[in-house]
Image (cartoon, rainbow, N blue to C red):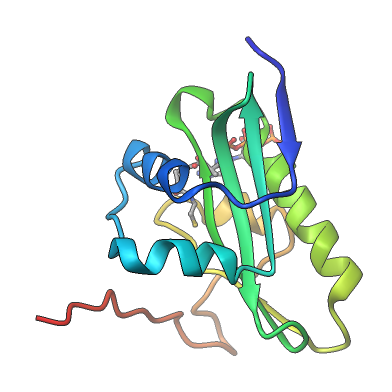
Length: 140
Ligand SMILES: CC(C)(COP(=O)(O)OP(=O)(O)OC[C@H]1O[C@@H](n2cnc3c(N)ncnc32)[C@H](O)[C@@H]1OP(=O)(O)O)[C@@H](O)C(=O)NCCC(=O)NCCS
């Protein structure tokens, strides 16, 4: 198996779409993809022979709130520790930049909660916190 190298860069829109397709996620409106990626605080890619095999990114306000988004490892390379390596780099970035009471959030995909619990995230809802909530916007 080719060595996987992590690079601190955003994927291209084409790479981003390809990764999302590989894990069966919907594709956002193309006009939103390039600016969204560009406006990330931090992106990390996993590459094998230069080809993208995974990514993760952080969005947020740069101080009080960071939100982790698009943690993806292509299915044929899952279970090799790549997701953990990507998240270690994401958490390293947050450790360097977060201040007291900074909120670090994410919406775990179904069945992925434990992956994030191992990194210190708390599952919701619980006795103190309500459920995370989402709208997948449909302008029609
Ligand atoms: C979630 C995802 C990023 C994990 O990446 P991965 O490279 O397969 O994970 P790793 O091999 O780095 O696993 C790291 C550890 O987490 C564990 N783990 C991975 N997925 C897990 C899951 N769904 N539930 C519980 N533990 C999990 C692994 O067993 C491993 O444990 P270990 O350190 O004791 O060996 C990957 O499965 C993926 O891309 N899934 C599709 C997209 C997705 O749902 N992303 C999450 C969006 S919130």
